[in-house]
Amino acid sequence: MHTQQYTLSSINQSVLTDYKTIINDAEKRYQSSIDQAVAKVLDHGGHEIIMLAGPSSSGKTTTAEKIAREIRKRGVSAYTISLDDFYASRESVPLLPNGDPDYETVYALDLPLISKCLNEFATIGHTELPIFDFTQGRRSSKTNVISLDEGDVIIVEGLHALNPAITGRLPKENLLKIYITVSSRIYDDKGKTLLKRRGIRFVRRAVRDYYFRNSSIENTCMLWENVQQGENKYLFPFEELSDMKINSIHEYEPCVFKNIAPLLFDDVSPNSKYYDACKEMAEVLNKFESIPVSQVPAESLLREFIGK
Image 1 (cartoon, helix red, strand yellow):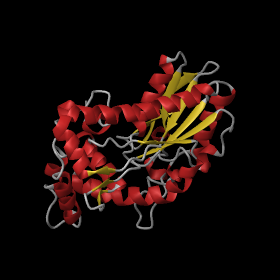
Image 2 (cartoon, rainbow, N blue to C red):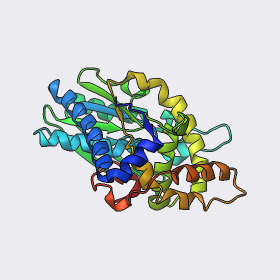
Image 3 (cartoon, helix red, strand yellow):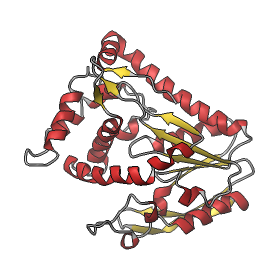
Image 4 (cartoon, rainbow, N blue to C red):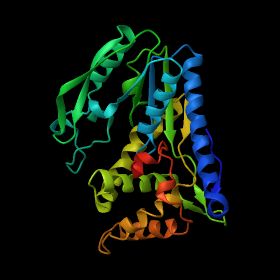
């Protein structure tokens, strides 16, 4: 997994010199990871099931779709599945000590149904997948029926895709496990961390949720606390079970988010307990040179968070 060290000055200098080069380099680096994953699948005769896990806003959805697309280009059928469709009904989700629903736990998913569907793929080649209706908080009456031919590939993406509570119920042969995250930090010129890995993911999520999920920055901050606890408990302990890792950082992304996120963070009330953290994040992003949002390639992973 690529873990090059990035600094504020090196990024800004690259932007001032020729921002198209830093964009192209980042996109090529990420695409190289996609190509490596596809090669790993096809070199072994086609893995029937790819489990793709990663923390919030790591780019799981886009990565799953890109891997599927590249596999199809090579003449093999590939399908993507989100574990989010296996959520239990809202009233059945386990509760946190304070009484709130714990949507981060693996036990918020219908584990027996996941096992049934994925094992049917592995044994008989077809299954009926649920579709979760998030507006209603329950499973839709509609389903998605998928049938596989020999050698076809299923890509299952979700926070818990590496959790043994799920993978332990699957046949190990032809199973490939991939972990994706932002695994690089950005430093200032004195070697101090300017943007942490989680900080980069938080900016991605804050922008996406504000514009596309009708969530205020205040609400995203509140949810982020539970998200981090869920990652610590249900994801990070299983990271090393992966067969390969993908670093989804795009080193130019702070230069893009600079045009969007600080204005959103500035709307957080001074009375909010999240005010200081949001103000600090806005100040950090404003240190970067600007790259217009319009310059982000249409197929970039960043489009998952800023829209098309």
